[in-house]
Length: 307
Image (tube, rainbow, N blue to C red):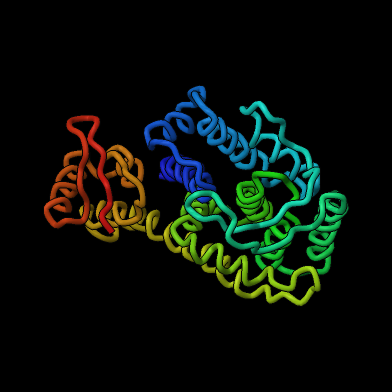
Protein backbone atom coordinates (compact mmCIF):
# COMPACT_ATOMS: atom_id res chain seq x y z
CA UNK A 1 0.00 0.00 0.00
CA UNK A 2 2.78 2.44 0.93
CA UNK A 3 4.67 1.65 -2.28
CA UNK A 4 1.57 2.47 -4.28
CA UNK A 5 1.05 5.74 -2.40
CA UNK A 6 4.69 6.70 -2.89
CA UNK A 7 4.46 6.17 -6.66
CA UNK A 8 1.32 8.28 -6.91
CA UNK A 9 2.79 11.00 -4.67
CA UNK A 10 5.98 11.23 -6.75
CA UNK A 11 3.97 11.77 -9.94
CA UNK A 12 1.59 14.26 -8.33
CA UNK A 13 4.41 16.19 -6.65
CA UNK A 14 6.43 16.53 -9.83
CA UNK A 15 3.37 17.58 -11.80
CA UNK A 16 1.95 20.01 -9.24
CA UNK A 17 5.19 21.78 -8.30
CA UNK A 18 5.90 22.49 -11.95
CA UNK A 19 2.28 23.52 -12.64
CA UNK A 20 2.62 26.17 -9.94
CA UNK A 21 5.31 27.73 -12.14
CA UNK A 22 3.32 27.36 -15.37
CA UNK A 23 5.26 24.29 -16.54
CA UNK A 24 2.65 21.89 -17.90
CA UNK A 25 2.90 18.59 -19.79
CA UNK A 26 0.41 15.82 -20.64
CA UNK A 27 -0.24 13.41 -17.80
CA UNK A 28 0.94 10.44 -19.86
CA UNK A 29 4.34 12.08 -20.37
CA UNK A 30 4.68 13.06 -16.71
CA UNK A 31 3.94 9.49 -15.68
CA UNK A 32 6.47 8.19 -18.21
CA UNK A 33 9.13 10.66 -17.06
CA UNK A 34 8.65 9.97 -13.34
CA UNK A 35 7.68 6.31 -13.22
CA UNK A 36 9.43 4.93 -16.30
CA UNK A 37 12.31 7.47 -16.39
CA UNK A 38 12.07 8.04 -20.14
CA UNK A 39 14.30 10.68 -21.70
CA UNK A 40 12.85 14.23 -21.85
CA UNK A 41 12.00 15.47 -25.36
CA UNK A 42 11.84 19.25 -24.89
CA UNK A 43 12.54 22.03 -22.38
CA UNK A 44 9.31 21.48 -20.46
CA UNK A 45 10.09 17.80 -20.01
CA UNK A 46 13.70 18.65 -19.07
CA UNK A 47 12.40 20.82 -16.22
CA UNK A 48 10.05 18.04 -15.11
CA UNK A 49 12.85 15.45 -15.23
CA UNK A 50 15.08 17.76 -13.19
CA UNK A 51 12.46 18.04 -10.45
CA UNK A 52 12.06 14.26 -10.50
CA UNK A 53 15.80 13.78 -9.97
CA UNK A 54 16.01 16.35 -7.16
CA UNK A 55 13.01 14.80 -5.42
CA UNK A 56 14.54 11.31 -5.71
CA UNK A 57 17.70 12.60 -4.04
CA UNK A 58 15.63 13.89 -1.13
CA UNK A 59 13.68 10.63 -0.84
CA UNK A 60 16.95 8.68 -0.74
CA UNK A 61 19.09 10.90 1.46
CA UNK A 62 16.96 13.78 2.76
CA UNK A 63 17.04 12.59 6.34
CA UNK A 64 20.85 12.76 6.38
CA UNK A 65 21.32 15.93 4.31
CA UNK A 66 22.41 18.88 6.47
CA UNK A 67 20.79 22.30 6.28
CA UNK A 68 23.48 24.19 4.37
CA UNK A 69 24.13 26.44 1.39
CA UNK A 70 25.82 23.54 -0.40
CA UNK A 71 22.69 21.37 -0.14
CA UNK A 72 20.52 24.20 -1.50
CA UNK A 73 22.94 24.64 -4.41
CA UNK A 74 22.95 20.87 -4.99
CA UNK A 75 19.16 20.75 -5.26
CA UNK A 76 19.17 23.66 -7.71
CA UNK A 77 21.86 21.91 -9.75
CA UNK A 78 19.74 18.75 -9.92
CA UNK A 79 16.77 20.83 -11.02
CA UNK A 80 18.75 22.02 -14.05
CA UNK A 81 20.64 18.78 -14.72
CA UNK A 82 18.82 18.07 -18.00
CA UNK A 83 19.01 21.63 -19.35
CA UNK A 84 21.64 23.54 -21.30
CA UNK A 85 21.99 26.29 -18.68
CA UNK A 86 23.91 25.34 -15.58
CA UNK A 87 22.23 25.31 -12.18
CA UNK A 88 23.75 25.40 -8.74
CA UNK A 89 24.82 29.07 -8.68
CA UNK A 90 23.46 32.02 -6.74
CA UNK A 91 21.87 34.81 -8.76
CA UNK A 92 24.27 37.31 -10.32
CA UNK A 93 21.74 40.14 -10.75
CA UNK A 94 19.08 41.52 -8.43
CA UNK A 95 15.55 40.13 -8.82
CA UNK A 96 12.00 40.89 -7.81
CA UNK A 97 8.86 38.85 -7.17
CA UNK A 98 6.29 40.26 -9.57
CA UNK A 99 2.78 39.72 -10.88
CA UNK A 100 2.24 39.41 -14.64
CA UNK A 101 -0.81 39.63 -16.85
CA UNK A 102 -1.87 37.09 -19.49
CA UNK A 103 0.54 38.67 -22.00
CA UNK A 104 3.52 38.37 -19.66
CA UNK A 105 3.66 42.08 -18.77
CA UNK A 106 4.60 42.98 -15.20
CA UNK A 107 1.61 44.53 -13.41
CA UNK A 108 2.93 44.77 -9.86
CA UNK A 109 6.11 44.22 -7.86
CA UNK A 110 5.18 42.04 -4.89
CA UNK A 111 8.57 41.98 -3.21
CA UNK A 112 12.15 43.10 -3.77
CA UNK A 113 14.45 40.23 -2.85
CA UNK A 114 17.85 40.39 -1.16
CA UNK A 115 20.45 41.95 -3.53
CA UNK A 116 22.61 39.50 -5.47
CA UNK A 117 25.82 40.68 -3.78
CA UNK A 118 24.36 39.89 -0.34
CA UNK A 119 22.80 36.53 -1.27
CA UNK A 120 25.68 34.11 -0.41
CA UNK A 121 25.98 35.54 3.11
CA UNK A 122 22.20 35.63 3.55
CA UNK A 123 21.95 31.93 2.70
CA UNK A 124 24.84 31.03 5.00
CA UNK A 125 23.16 33.00 7.80
CA UNK A 126 19.82 31.29 7.14
CA UNK A 127 21.35 27.82 7.55
CA UNK A 128 23.18 28.93 10.70
CA UNK A 129 20.02 30.42 12.23
CA UNK A 130 18.09 27.22 11.50
CA UNK A 131 20.68 25.05 13.25
CA UNK A 132 20.83 27.46 16.19
CA UNK A 133 17.05 27.42 16.57
CA UNK A 134 17.12 23.62 16.76
CA UNK A 135 19.95 23.76 19.28
CA UNK A 136 17.85 26.16 21.36
CA UNK A 137 15.12 23.52 21.53
CA UNK A 138 12.56 25.01 19.16
CA UNK A 139 10.28 22.49 17.46
CA UNK A 140 11.17 21.84 13.79
CA UNK A 141 7.50 22.12 12.75
CA UNK A 142 7.70 25.76 13.88
CA UNK A 143 11.10 26.50 12.34
CA UNK A 144 10.57 24.84 8.93
CA UNK A 145 7.89 27.23 7.58
CA UNK A 146 9.98 30.17 8.84
CA UNK A 147 13.01 28.83 6.96
CA UNK A 148 10.97 28.47 3.76
CA UNK A 149 9.56 32.01 4.11
CA UNK A 150 13.06 33.45 4.60
CA UNK A 151 14.41 31.43 1.68
CA UNK A 152 11.73 32.84 -0.63
CA UNK A 153 12.40 36.38 0.63
CA UNK A 154 16.11 35.98 -0.12
CA UNK A 155 15.11 34.52 -3.52
CA UNK A 156 18.68 33.30 -4.09
CA UNK A 157 18.39 32.10 -7.71
CA UNK A 158 17.58 33.77 -10.99
CA UNK A 159 14.98 31.06 -11.61
CA UNK A 160 13.68 27.97 -9.83
CA UNK A 161 13.21 29.49 -6.37
CA UNK A 162 9.64 28.23 -5.93
CA UNK A 163 10.46 24.68 -6.93
CA UNK A 164 13.59 24.58 -4.75
CA UNK A 165 11.55 25.89 -1.81
CA UNK A 166 9.12 22.98 -2.17
CA UNK A 167 11.99 20.50 -2.46
CA UNK A 168 13.49 21.99 0.70
CA UNK A 169 10.14 21.67 2.43
CA UNK A 170 10.22 17.92 1.85
CA UNK A 171 13.87 17.63 2.84
CA UNK A 172 13.48 19.57 6.08
CA UNK A 173 10.35 17.63 7.03
CA UNK A 174 12.06 14.28 6.38
CA UNK A 175 15.06 15.38 8.44
CA UNK A 176 12.71 16.26 11.31
CA UNK A 177 10.89 12.91 11.09
CA UNK A 178 7.74 14.10 9.30
CA UNK A 179 7.53 11.64 6.41
CA UNK A 180 3.99 12.21 5.16
CA UNK A 181 5.26 13.90 1.99
CA UNK A 182 6.59 10.57 0.76
CA UNK A 183 3.07 9.19 0.52
CA UNK A 184 0.79 12.23 0.17
CA UNK A 185 1.89 14.95 -2.23
CA UNK A 186 2.33 18.25 -0.39
CA UNK A 187 2.96 19.93 -3.75
CA UNK A 188 -0.49 18.82 -4.91
CA UNK A 189 -2.06 20.41 -1.86
CA UNK A 190 -0.11 23.64 -2.49
CA UNK A 191 -1.32 23.59 -6.10
CA UNK A 192 -4.93 22.94 -5.13
CA UNK A 193 -4.81 25.95 -2.81
CA UNK A 194 -2.48 28.06 -4.96
CA UNK A 195 -4.37 31.32 -4.41
CA UNK A 196 -3.99 31.01 -0.64
CA UNK A 197 -0.42 29.74 -1.07
CA UNK A 198 0.69 32.91 -2.83
CA UNK A 199 -1.53 35.22 -0.76
CA UNK A 200 -0.15 34.07 2.60
CA UNK A 201 3.44 34.24 1.34
CA UNK A 202 2.88 37.79 0.19
CA UNK A 203 1.18 38.84 3.44
CA UNK A 204 3.96 37.34 5.57
CA UNK A 205 6.74 38.89 3.47
CA UNK A 206 5.54 42.48 3.92
CA UNK A 207 8.02 44.29 6.19
CA UNK A 208 10.50 41.39 6.03
CA UNK A 209 13.51 43.61 5.30
CA UNK A 210 12.69 45.71 8.38
CA UNK A 211 12.01 42.62 10.52
CA UNK A 212 8.46 43.86 11.01
CA UNK A 213 6.64 41.12 9.09
CA UNK A 214 3.85 38.91 10.43
CA UNK A 215 4.83 35.28 9.87
CA UNK A 216 1.55 33.78 11.06
CA UNK A 217 -0.52 33.90 7.83
CA UNK A 218 2.08 31.70 6.14
CA UNK A 219 2.78 29.53 9.19
CA UNK A 220 -0.91 28.78 9.80
CA UNK A 221 -1.40 27.92 6.13
CA UNK A 222 1.70 25.68 6.14
CA UNK A 223 0.55 23.84 9.25
CA UNK A 224 -2.88 23.37 7.68
CA UNK A 225 -1.29 21.74 4.63
CA UNK A 226 0.69 19.32 6.81
CA UNK A 227 -2.33 18.45 8.95
CA UNK A 228 -4.54 17.84 5.92
CA UNK A 229 -1.86 15.62 4.37
CA UNK A 230 -1.69 13.51 7.53
CA UNK A 231 -5.48 13.35 7.57
CA UNK A 232 -5.51 12.07 3.99
CA UNK A 233 -2.76 9.56 4.79
CA UNK A 234 -4.68 8.24 7.79
CA UNK A 235 -7.84 7.96 5.74
CA UNK A 236 -6.20 6.09 2.87
CA UNK A 237 -4.15 3.66 4.93
CA UNK A 238 -6.75 3.31 7.66
CA UNK A 239 -9.34 2.23 5.11
CA UNK A 240 -7.05 -0.53 3.90
CA UNK A 241 -5.86 -1.74 7.30
CA UNK A 242 -9.19 -1.55 9.14
CA UNK A 243 -11.43 -2.19 6.14
CA UNK A 244 -13.48 0.90 7.00
CA UNK A 245 -15.91 1.96 4.32
CA UNK A 246 -17.08 0.01 1.30
CA UNK A 247 -14.81 -0.54 -1.68
CA UNK A 248 -17.05 1.63 -3.84
CA UNK A 249 -16.82 4.46 -1.31
CA UNK A 250 -13.06 4.29 -1.29
CA UNK A 251 -12.92 4.40 -5.09
CA UNK A 252 -15.14 7.48 -5.01
CA UNK A 253 -12.89 9.11 -2.40
CA UNK A 254 -9.85 8.42 -4.58
CA UNK A 255 -11.58 10.01 -7.58
CA UNK A 256 -12.58 13.07 -5.54
CA UNK A 257 -8.93 13.67 -4.66
CA UNK A 258 -7.98 13.94 -8.33
CA UNK A 259 -7.46 17.36 -9.88
CA UNK A 260 -6.13 16.32 -13.29
CA UNK A 261 -7.15 13.67 -15.87
CA UNK A 262 -6.35 10.12 -14.75
CA UNK A 263 -6.59 6.49 -15.82
CA UNK A 264 -8.40 3.75 -13.99
CA UNK A 265 -4.96 2.23 -13.37
CA UNK A 266 -4.08 5.32 -11.32
CA UNK A 267 -6.94 4.47 -8.96
CA UNK A 268 -5.83 0.85 -8.73
CA UNK A 269 -2.56 1.93 -7.11
CA UNK A 270 -4.52 3.82 -4.45
CA UNK A 271 -7.06 1.07 -3.71
CA UNK A 272 -5.05 -2.08 -4.47
CA UNK A 273 -7.55 -4.45 -2.85
CA UNK A 274 -10.36 -3.28 -5.17
CA UNK A 275 -10.81 -5.14 -8.47
CA UNK A 276 -10.51 -3.41 -11.83
CA UNK A 277 -14.13 -4.30 -12.61
CA UNK A 278 -15.33 -2.56 -9.45
CA UNK A 279 -13.28 0.54 -10.26
CA UNK A 280 -14.71 0.67 -13.78
CA UNK A 281 -18.25 0.21 -12.45
CA UNK A 282 -17.84 3.09 -9.99
CA UNK A 283 -16.43 5.33 -12.73
CA UNK A 284 -19.42 4.55 -14.95
CA UNK A 285 -21.78 5.43 -12.08
CA UNK A 286 -19.97 8.69 -11.41
CA UNK A 287 -20.12 9.53 -15.11
CA UNK A 288 -23.91 9.11 -15.08
CA UNK A 289 -24.05 11.35 -12.00
CA UNK A 290 -22.00 14.02 -13.74
CA UNK A 291 -19.04 13.78 -11.34
CA UNK A 292 -16.56 12.78 -14.06
CA UNK A 293 -16.39 12.60 -17.83
CA UNK A 294 -14.31 10.36 -20.07
CA UNK A 295 -12.14 10.99 -23.11
CA UNK A 296 -10.91 8.26 -25.44
CA UNK A 297 -11.81 4.62 -25.60
CA UNK A 298 -10.57 1.24 -24.41
CA UNK A 299 -7.25 1.14 -22.59
CA UNK A 300 -6.50 4.74 -23.55
CA UNK A 301 -9.53 6.25 -21.83
CA UNK A 302 -8.85 9.17 -19.49
CA UNK A 303 -11.24 10.29 -16.75
CA UNK A 304 -11.63 13.99 -15.97
CA UNK A 305 -12.95 15.23 -12.59
CA UNK A 306 -15.82 17.71 -12.83
CA UNK A 307 -15.66 19.91 -9.75
